[in-house]
Image 1 (cartoon, rainbow, N blue to C red):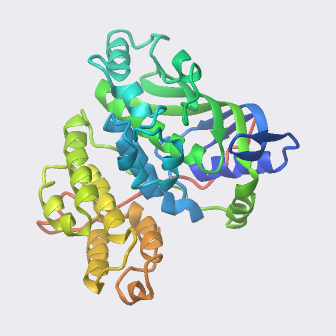
Image 2: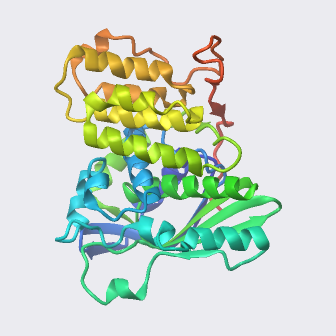
Amino acid sequence: MYLKANTLDDLLDDAFKLLLKSKMRVSATKGTTVEEHGVVLELTRPRARLSRAHMKGHVFSCIGEFIWYISCSNRLEPVEYYISRYKKFAEKDGTVWGAYGPRIFGGDRSQYEVVKEMLSERPSTRKAVIQLFDREDVLQDYNDIPCTCTMQFLVRDGMLNLVVHMRSNDVYMGLPHDIFAFTMIQEILAHDLGFKLGTYKHMVGSFHLYDHDREKVEQYLKEGFQPTREMPAMPSGNQWGHITALLKIEDAIRRGGPTAVSQTLSKGNELDPYWADIARLFAIYALTKGFDGPREQLREVVELRKAMSNDFYATYIRKRAKRLTQEITKLDLGEQSDLPPRKWTGLSRSAFHLGGTDIAQSRVQAT
């Protein structure tokens, strides 16, 4: 089965419908599922990596998991802060055996660096593969092993394409997070190499839907078509200076909590607006996680939303804020989630472009 779409929402729409029709039932370790075999999904616009539907709250768990990968950590605590269910996958020593970060970015000469060197020297190579699943993963009974087997990067016509092979993929929780993280890595590498961003293909051996997620999937489909917008593009050039600074900011905010937000963000002035917005999302998450704070804490969320350089994230911030308390409705959270592009003037925002990228609202039929 081959599914192709411009946006994550359109891809999810087709994938959900496919699995809702499936008659193949499997009693798996984590619950009963319906599944399909050998499914290929193509996202033609990898920056359209976030859902604009009810799953829009997932932006915080997506960036949290992504930053955990980039940090090269296998510790449970940093990722559990964003995704509590990770504790089910941790070993007794507080590590996650299947963590992707060390496998992609770890070692004196990481697989990421090797792939980058190969593509820089010979862009047409078919050897630019990062291996995540390893024979050692099945020699013992670990609580978590990689669902991802390989990531293959292919440069064609001046564009960096990514093909990911999954042994197993949960359509409701796993797929959106995987597509987000892998396409972010794809875009970072494209900038490292000076290529344009190509397409993203996601190949799955066991593509499944858990019974306990079935009602959520049906509710998603009832929401209908979504605004078709992309995340803004990363700034030109190498991203790693900004990423290194972002890692320090995220760590300080996560460890320090709401009281650390203002001081920590003030140290991030060197960040490009793109990455500064990601830092603000981490701050908003910290301010709203388990909220029982003062009204001023809610006002800080509003001010952070207003400071965002791109209004693409406004709908996600409002979704997060509305979970807190009725007090938030008294604040200026705005009403429109997908505003037309506009620019602010003035010293504080003269470098910030507030427009999102609109994609034609069309669906590419599965072939």
